Image 1 (cartoon, rainbow, N blue to C red):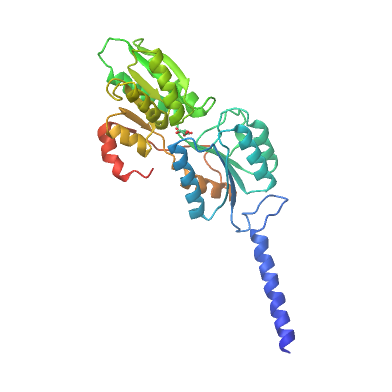
Image 2 (cartoon, rainbow, N blue to C red):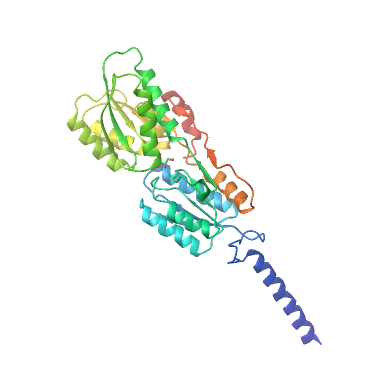
Amino acid sequence: MLKKWSAAVLAGALAVGALAGCGGGDDAGSGDSGGGGGKITMGFSQVGAESGWRTANTKSIQESAATAGIDLKFSDAQGKQENQIKAIRSFIAQRVDVIAFSPVVESGWDTVLKEAKDANIPVILTDRSVDSQDKTLYKSFIGSDFVLEGKKAGEWLVKEYEGKPEPVNIVELQGSPGAAPANDRKAGFAEVIKADPKFKVIASQTGQFTRTDGKEVMEAFLKAHQDIDVLYAHNDDMGLGAIEAIEAAGKKPGTDIKIITVDAVKDGMTALAAGKINYIVECSPLLGPQLMDLAKKVKAGETVEQRVVTEETTFTQEQAKAALPDRKY
Ligand code: GZL
């Protein structure tokens, strides 16, 4: 008798387990593995690990996925578009529930995004956008307005040199070639300073968003130009590398050469508080929580905003001193 009873219990237990598995399993037909109340799986392709901002952004994505109970498949593209395309194709093959990525460059995404759309896997862009004309290729883009960031940098410079007639010679350290923040921060800054011909960009070159390249390019700028008044660097890391070059050349960063950067990571804010940088335009890397909320809404079939602009501000030296103690990154 006992044997028959235990067999029935075992059969029942197996049936329940199987049902629970169906809810969390992946139904290859629709690619819907979250609909049955199962864990959402997100494939995320990250640009790389080029800067302090990127490190903080990766931390935000990974911690937010864990908090949201989302199973994160994370891939580091090491700055290469072909690696991101490979990762997205792998996520499609694995039939993840949602794909999110920060496009290393703006162009060349339509083919692989169409493959994700044909596989019925929603895509969310985070941090950087793409120049695809077909807005149905992604559900939402969450990130900063980089043109506005460039304009804020230009507006500070215009105010700083108000009433001073002499020419203002500017050198510019651009972000990585083809990247939306590099293109847009350059455009926004140029748009503002073109109002007054005294502002002259005498040299502009990519520093790849890294300290190492920022230092090397600034060394070259200093060798070629004795009359540099201002450095505009598209991120803190290149500005920090440039500070090393400026000091090695016997000049005082923030005094002999005024410096404007973008990001507001801790090392940048520390240099700003010390007067080695003069102004920082913030670009928040803490996109994780909003990305995970968007992923859950997209997976639940809810309509989401196609464009989510992140909140950010600007910092002077005094503001940096006040903000540093509470800085999260
Ligand atoms: C901006 C981000 C940029 C940062 C850099 O959203 O894409 O890339 O400004 C980072 O520090 O390397």
